Image (cartoon, rainbow, N blue to C red):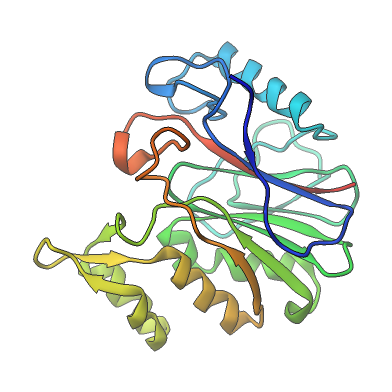
Length: 246
Protein backbone atom coordinates (compact mmCIF):
# COMPACT_ATOMS: atom_id res chain seq x y z
CA UNK A 1 0.00 0.00 0.00
CA UNK A 2 1.43 3.43 -0.92
CA UNK A 3 1.94 6.07 1.73
CA UNK A 4 -0.88 8.59 2.05
CA UNK A 5 -0.33 12.08 3.42
CA UNK A 6 -2.80 14.74 4.49
CA UNK A 7 -1.82 18.07 2.97
CA UNK A 8 -2.83 21.20 4.90
CA UNK A 9 -5.47 23.26 3.14
CA UNK A 10 -4.17 26.71 3.97
CA UNK A 11 -2.78 29.71 2.04
CA UNK A 12 0.85 29.13 3.03
CA UNK A 13 3.68 30.59 0.92
CA UNK A 14 4.97 28.36 -1.88
CA UNK A 15 8.24 27.56 -0.14
CA UNK A 16 6.45 26.14 2.91
CA UNK A 17 6.03 22.36 2.73
CA UNK A 18 3.84 20.55 5.23
CA UNK A 19 2.07 17.23 5.73
CA UNK A 20 0.56 14.86 8.27
CA UNK A 21 1.05 11.14 7.84
CA UNK A 22 -1.66 8.53 8.19
CA UNK A 23 -1.13 4.86 9.02
CA UNK A 24 -1.49 3.93 5.33
CA UNK A 25 1.50 2.10 3.88
CA UNK A 26 4.57 1.34 5.94
CA UNK A 27 6.07 -1.90 7.17
CA UNK A 28 4.81 -2.30 10.73
CA UNK A 29 2.55 -5.22 11.66
CA UNK A 30 0.21 -6.28 14.47
CA UNK A 31 -1.00 -3.46 16.72
CA UNK A 32 1.27 -1.08 14.79
CA UNK A 33 0.16 -2.11 11.29
CA UNK A 34 1.03 0.63 8.84
CA UNK A 35 3.45 3.53 8.88
CA UNK A 36 4.31 3.62 12.58
CA UNK A 37 6.92 6.33 13.19
CA UNK A 38 7.18 6.05 16.99
CA UNK A 39 10.23 4.24 18.35
CA UNK A 40 8.95 4.29 21.94
CA UNK A 41 5.73 2.27 21.62
CA UNK A 42 7.00 -1.31 21.47
CA UNK A 43 7.32 -1.76 17.71
CA UNK A 44 10.39 -3.41 16.20
CA UNK A 45 13.12 -0.71 16.16
CA UNK A 46 14.46 -1.74 12.75
CA UNK A 47 10.96 -1.52 11.27
CA UNK A 48 10.44 1.97 12.71
CA UNK A 49 13.75 3.11 11.21
CA UNK A 50 12.69 1.67 7.86
CA UNK A 51 9.34 3.48 8.10
CA UNK A 52 11.11 6.76 8.87
CA UNK A 53 13.44 6.30 5.90
CA UNK A 54 10.46 5.50 3.68
CA UNK A 55 8.66 8.65 4.82
CA UNK A 56 11.69 10.84 4.22
CA UNK A 57 12.15 9.40 0.74
CA UNK A 58 8.51 9.42 -0.35
CA UNK A 59 7.83 12.96 0.92
CA UNK A 60 11.22 14.36 -0.21
CA UNK A 61 11.94 15.67 3.27
CA UNK A 62 15.34 17.36 3.41
CA UNK A 63 17.96 17.26 6.14
CA UNK A 64 17.80 15.38 9.41
CA UNK A 65 14.44 15.16 11.14
CA UNK A 66 14.78 15.99 14.87
CA UNK A 67 12.58 13.28 16.37
CA UNK A 68 11.61 14.79 19.71
CA UNK A 69 11.17 13.13 23.08
CA UNK A 70 7.74 14.57 23.84
CA UNK A 71 6.78 15.03 27.50
CA UNK A 72 3.54 17.10 27.35
CA UNK A 73 5.53 20.22 28.20
CA UNK A 74 6.17 23.58 26.54
CA UNK A 75 9.86 23.43 25.48
CA UNK A 76 10.60 24.36 21.86
CA UNK A 77 13.56 22.84 20.00
CA UNK A 78 15.29 25.15 17.53
CA UNK A 79 15.76 23.06 14.39
CA UNK A 80 19.36 23.16 13.26
CA UNK A 81 20.72 23.17 16.80
CA UNK A 82 23.15 20.27 17.30
CA UNK A 83 21.90 17.22 19.19
CA UNK A 84 23.14 13.70 19.84
CA UNK A 85 20.03 12.25 21.49
CA UNK A 86 16.40 13.09 20.81
CA UNK A 87 15.72 16.61 22.15
CA UNK A 88 13.22 16.71 25.02
CA UNK A 89 10.62 19.14 23.72
CA UNK A 90 7.04 19.31 22.51
CA UNK A 91 7.58 21.74 19.66
CA UNK A 92 10.19 22.64 17.07
CA UNK A 93 10.88 25.84 15.15
CA UNK A 94 13.02 26.58 12.08
CA UNK A 95 14.13 29.89 10.59
CA UNK A 96 16.35 28.34 7.91
CA UNK A 97 15.55 26.25 4.85
CA UNK A 98 15.81 22.45 4.76
CA UNK A 99 15.37 22.04 8.51
CA UNK A 100 12.22 19.99 9.14
CA UNK A 101 10.12 20.34 12.28
CA UNK A 102 8.16 17.26 13.36
CA UNK A 103 5.81 16.17 16.14
CA UNK A 104 4.34 12.71 16.71
CA UNK A 105 0.72 12.13 17.74
CA UNK A 106 -1.93 9.44 18.21
CA UNK A 107 -4.86 11.57 19.52
CA UNK A 108 -3.04 14.67 20.78
CA UNK A 109 -3.32 17.74 18.60
CA UNK A 110 -0.53 18.57 16.12
CA UNK A 111 -0.39 22.24 15.13
CA UNK A 112 1.77 23.47 12.24
CA UNK A 113 2.73 27.14 11.89
CA UNK A 114 4.27 29.43 9.29
CA UNK A 115 4.41 33.16 8.71
CA UNK A 116 2.85 34.83 5.68
CA UNK A 117 6.27 35.79 4.33
CA UNK A 118 7.58 32.22 4.43
CA UNK A 119 10.55 32.95 6.69
CA UNK A 120 9.80 30.72 9.69
CA UNK A 121 7.93 27.47 10.40
CA UNK A 122 7.10 25.48 13.52
CA UNK A 123 5.30 22.37 14.75
CA UNK A 124 3.74 21.80 18.18
CA UNK A 125 2.38 18.74 20.01
CA UNK A 126 -0.60 19.71 22.15
CA UNK A 127 -2.29 17.23 24.40
CA UNK A 128 -4.60 18.90 26.89
CA UNK A 129 -1.78 19.31 29.44
CA UNK A 130 0.58 20.97 26.99
CA UNK A 131 -2.22 23.06 25.52
CA UNK A 132 -3.22 24.33 28.95
CA UNK A 133 0.42 24.90 29.95
CA UNK A 134 1.03 27.11 26.91
CA UNK A 135 2.89 25.07 24.31
CA UNK A 136 1.22 26.97 21.45
CA UNK A 137 2.13 30.33 22.96
CA UNK A 138 5.74 29.22 23.55
CA UNK A 139 5.94 28.07 19.94
CA UNK A 140 4.76 31.46 18.74
CA UNK A 141 7.36 33.14 20.95
CA UNK A 142 10.08 30.97 19.40
CA UNK A 143 8.96 31.96 15.91
CA UNK A 144 9.66 35.59 16.76
CA UNK A 145 7.18 37.19 14.38
CA UNK A 146 3.96 39.12 14.83
CA UNK A 147 1.08 36.75 15.65
CA UNK A 148 -1.09 38.53 13.08
CA UNK A 149 1.39 37.33 10.42
CA UNK A 150 1.10 33.68 11.49
CA UNK A 151 -0.92 30.93 9.83
CA UNK A 152 -1.78 27.82 11.88
CA UNK A 153 -3.08 24.44 10.75
CA UNK A 154 -4.49 21.82 13.10
CA UNK A 155 -3.87 18.22 12.09
CA UNK A 156 -5.68 14.99 12.98
CA UNK A 157 -6.58 14.67 16.67
CA UNK A 158 -9.19 13.13 18.94
CA UNK A 159 -12.56 14.59 17.97
CA UNK A 160 -15.08 16.40 20.16
CA UNK A 161 -17.40 13.39 20.36
CA UNK A 162 -14.62 11.08 21.60
CA UNK A 163 -12.52 13.14 24.02
CA UNK A 164 -14.04 12.40 27.42
CA UNK A 165 -12.36 14.17 30.34
CA UNK A 166 -12.91 14.65 34.04
CA UNK A 167 -14.19 17.87 35.63
CA UNK A 168 -10.64 18.84 36.65
CA UNK A 169 -9.70 19.33 32.98
CA UNK A 170 -12.70 21.55 32.33
CA UNK A 171 -12.07 23.50 35.54
CA UNK A 172 -8.45 24.12 34.58
CA UNK A 173 -9.33 25.58 31.19
CA UNK A 174 -12.24 27.65 32.50
CA UNK A 175 -10.09 29.10 35.27
CA UNK A 176 -7.65 30.30 32.61
CA UNK A 177 -10.13 31.39 29.95
CA UNK A 178 -13.85 31.74 30.63
CA UNK A 179 -14.73 31.39 26.94
CA UNK A 180 -13.54 27.77 27.10
CA UNK A 181 -16.94 26.84 28.54
CA UNK A 182 -18.22 26.48 24.95
CA UNK A 183 -15.64 23.75 24.24
CA UNK A 184 -17.15 21.33 26.79
CA UNK A 185 -20.44 19.45 26.66
CA UNK A 186 -21.78 17.00 29.25
CA UNK A 187 -20.86 13.38 28.58
CA UNK A 188 -23.45 10.59 28.75
CA UNK A 189 -21.27 9.33 31.60
CA UNK A 190 -22.37 11.34 34.63
CA UNK A 191 -19.68 13.64 35.96
CA UNK A 192 -17.63 13.55 32.77
CA UNK A 193 -17.31 16.04 29.93
CA UNK A 194 -16.65 15.86 26.19
CA UNK A 195 -13.89 18.29 25.25
CA UNK A 196 -13.30 19.87 21.85
CA UNK A 197 -9.51 20.18 21.69
CA UNK A 198 -9.76 21.95 18.33
CA UNK A 199 -11.99 24.65 19.85
CA UNK A 200 -9.70 24.97 22.87
CA UNK A 201 -6.69 25.46 20.59
CA UNK A 202 -8.52 28.09 18.54
CA UNK A 203 -9.30 30.01 21.72
CA UNK A 204 -5.66 29.93 22.85
CA UNK A 205 -4.44 31.01 19.42
CA UNK A 206 -7.00 33.80 19.18
CA UNK A 207 -5.95 35.15 22.57
CA UNK A 208 -2.33 35.09 21.37
CA UNK A 209 -3.29 37.13 18.29
CA UNK A 210 -3.47 34.37 15.67
CA UNK A 211 -6.71 34.56 13.69
CA UNK A 212 -5.74 32.61 10.55
CA UNK A 213 -6.39 29.07 11.80
CA UNK A 214 -7.18 26.15 9.50
CA UNK A 215 -7.83 22.40 9.72
CA UNK A 216 -9.43 20.64 12.65
CA UNK A 217 -11.82 18.38 10.77
CA UNK A 218 -10.46 14.91 11.55
CA UNK A 219 -11.06 12.49 14.44
CA UNK A 220 -8.34 9.94 15.07
CA UNK A 221 -10.49 7.77 17.35
CA UNK A 222 -13.35 7.23 14.90
CA UNK A 223 -11.24 6.40 11.82
CA UNK A 224 -9.14 3.29 12.56
CA UNK A 225 -8.39 2.70 8.88
CA UNK A 226 -6.51 5.99 8.58
CA UNK A 227 -5.30 6.92 12.06
CA UNK A 228 -3.57 5.49 15.08
CA UNK A 229 -5.40 6.27 18.34
CA UNK A 230 -4.06 5.71 21.83
CA UNK A 231 -7.48 6.37 23.37
CA UNK A 232 -9.05 3.72 21.13
CA UNK A 233 -6.37 1.01 21.12
CA UNK A 234 -3.92 1.75 23.98
CA UNK A 235 -1.07 -0.07 22.21
CA UNK A 236 -0.70 1.65 18.88
CA UNK A 237 1.66 3.47 16.52
CA UNK A 238 2.35 7.16 16.02
CA UNK A 239 1.76 9.53 13.11
CA UNK A 240 3.86 12.60 12.44
CA UNK A 241 3.09 16.13 11.32
CA UNK A 242 5.96 17.85 9.53
CA UNK A 243 6.79 21.29 8.17
CA UNK A 244 9.85 22.82 6.56
CA UNK A 245 11.04 25.61 4.30
CA UNK A 246 12.34 24.81 0.82
